[in-house]
Length: 87
Image (tube, rainbow, N blue to C red):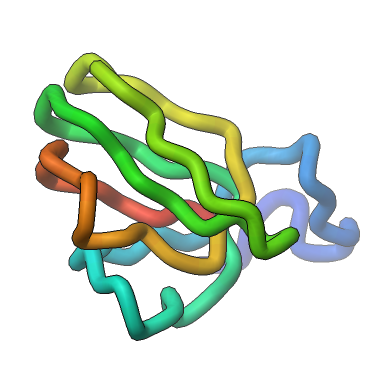
């Protein structure tokens, strides 16, 4: 089915067009840089931003959409579950 907006360029302000399940890993980068992360189950999320900086996002409630561009979700420090990368 063709999309209504197929002739428009995607941008970071628009909605995500694709998603993938995230398995936290300290060594392996995600298949794509995200525009957001969805966290399904409460916990901490440790990330490596596209800039290379690392951060621990503590106490993220389940059902939260984090509008962040990350290259990795790190296993060390991540306790949240059912994380989805949105692009």
